[in-house]
Length: 392
Ligand code: SF4
Ligand code: SF4
Image (cartoon, rainbow, N blue to C red):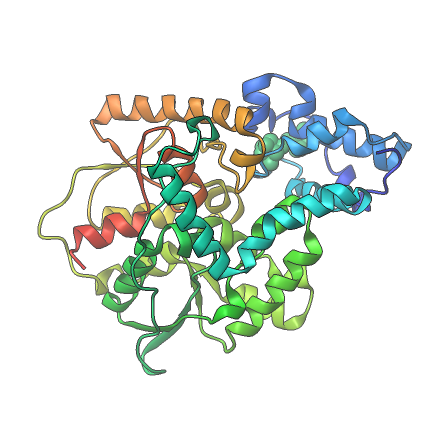
């Protein structure tokens, strides 16, 4: 690729003191032991390109492409290095500098913002899975053939009125979770609107891939589609993390104001547990797996526990929130590393099962749910577990 201007913020880039405290929290370093596949090694490679004029070679691209963007390195870092910004900026520069990379990424992600096409494509893929036409090594979890009715707006502007964001993949692959989310919001006393076609994708996957301009366009559409000053409820950790960052991505006062209204559904419900019914019978305990974008980015993983504890007991994992390897589109783009990282998580979940007898895993992100289901685990969204326990 040759010389590339990464255009990274020099203050952010210089904030790493190379202490290495982030290394145990990096899934790609944990499974490879390779310095270049650690946060410190990746930052060192970025500095070589930005500060010392090094060429962008195959090794540099591999170091960047193999990052899951889990941001597990951020809370572990005593210097507060904003690694997510650095990686997003680097991928943006790589996409700008490499036209063919830009073209195929654009083609791959175009379907996310064309909701009817995404629904039709998902149905075709689900059918192909039933006919055994999709090789198992691709690692796709079983997609639904039928998804039922889309969530419709409920109620007027009286009471606790909010927006429910339905998105792209969540609606195509996990629509029953939207219906259960709506039922829980209603049980907690809220009425809600759902956005129209203008807000069919939050742009998170585009931003991760370096398609920052496309991500900003989609973000601006989402902001416009949900006006007002009421909360915007999101039940996908990856989407919520992206939407809480719209102020930085889009950079307008409207986007800054919008990002402050974004609330993960578990955060919202955890403050209203007294308004929910109590279960007649408590189901068996569940194991909690924290999606990285809920734990490391939104830092909103505790409310999941509060919501689950309303109906059952919670079993913790012993890996300090290490990534499962899903990483949005990462499991499709880097299947070997994603599967190796997942093997560690499956072993950790196995230990939790051996300790507690619990077999159901709760995870509040569609990517993690599908990635772990593909390994044969029974993984459900917390909202589904709670709604079922309350027979809503
Ligand atoms: S974002 Fe995740 S995979 Fe990437 S360097 Fe940080 S800890 Fe490692
Ligand atoms: S990113 Fe933070 S924790 Fe990791 S080596 Fe740099 S300063 Fe240390």
